[in-house]
Length: 315
Image 1: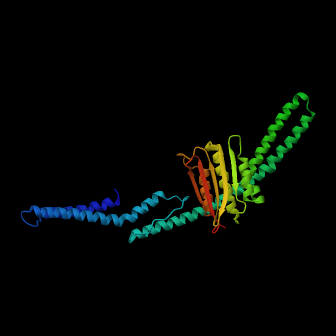
Image 2: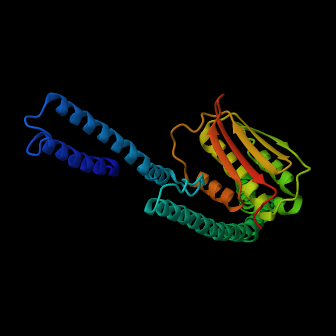
Image 3: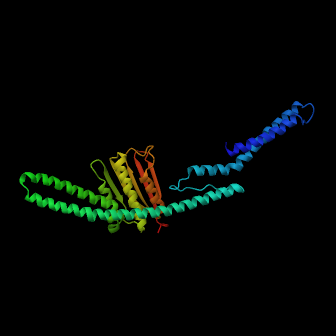
């Protein structure tokens, strides 16, 4: 039973018992007059109503705190419940707000370590794919070419087919390595990296378009990497799950922020719960103090918007 009703019913029992005593053994007059009984009953009803109003006002801060507890999501920082109320209630709300601040700080710190470790591991795997497997497949291609040149004419076609399969595998490995470690981001900058990324996602069933501002304000390496990874994850989700024909990537800036927007014409989010990819995007956004909004568009499809403030970036 809610706290409000427990206190109200206890007070009600006391008031009803007092009224019953006045109408029973401890009477205001003998016998009890109808007018007196009516006054007592009306007075009891008024006291109960007044008691309910006072309790509702006193316990309102606890109700706000309960709603905040039920809706708090560390990946979506929001407003804190006002530290209203008196005595223990005010202290309880203030303690809850302090706990949220500490949890969000600890989560941001741990997420930063995890994402840094993830990027380092991606870099290592990409390097091994390029240096080990890539070089091995290149050597295999050269051997296949040498064998095909000396093979009987009847077998050359088979060697050429194996060459094409090996070459396709080598191209796929290089593509995976580029996604794991966006070297173009370090070498040519964010706009060029996003342009290359959208080109990769233009396939027979999906057309990707980019609209990029080139005169961007100075961004930290973390901010550029987060912008790139959010775009990469959004385009990947579009290609795999959205059933879209077209996706547009827009990068522009305002006087105090850089914003990236990815819109597709697919079937939208629906009731699908957020997966690990979207949670990863939210963690990356929190790491640099950015706002991430993911929603279904009114005309259909999904919209992913990341707004990175340029006046208090994470360093």
